[in-house]
Length: 122
Image 1 (tube, helix red, strand yellow):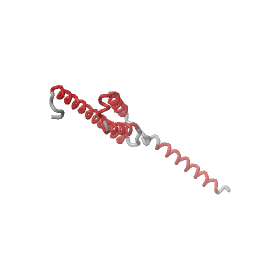
Image 2 (cartoon, helix red, strand yellow):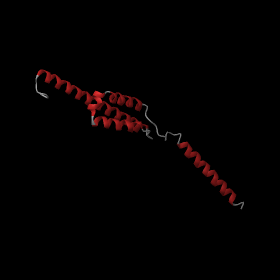
Image 3 (cartoon, rainbow, N blue to C red):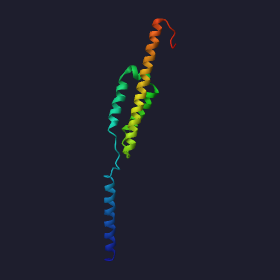
Image 4 (cartoon, rainbow, N blue to C red):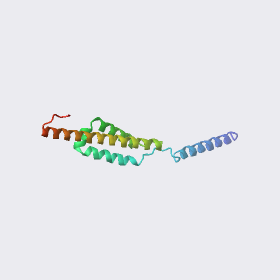
């Protein structure tokens, strides 16, 4: 029985070392991170959604922006991926805003043309 004692101690020491290595992995940047820029992009999206004139004209671009912002909000193991998702979300929000603003401008031009008696879209 005494011959087995050193093997048991070795196993316990090995298991302890493995536990230490695994716990150290959690402190080496392997935990998911969320890019702080996600908050800014979410605020930009909220501003767009809060404007009824723009939100009603953004259509599918607004949905794509919402999806991208949701993805950017998710913590990622790779900080570069998190930063990339925030960048893409920001561009999609800007695209949705620009599209909505262009549609508002088109509507205004058509309204002015109709006041003048011109045919719309000419």
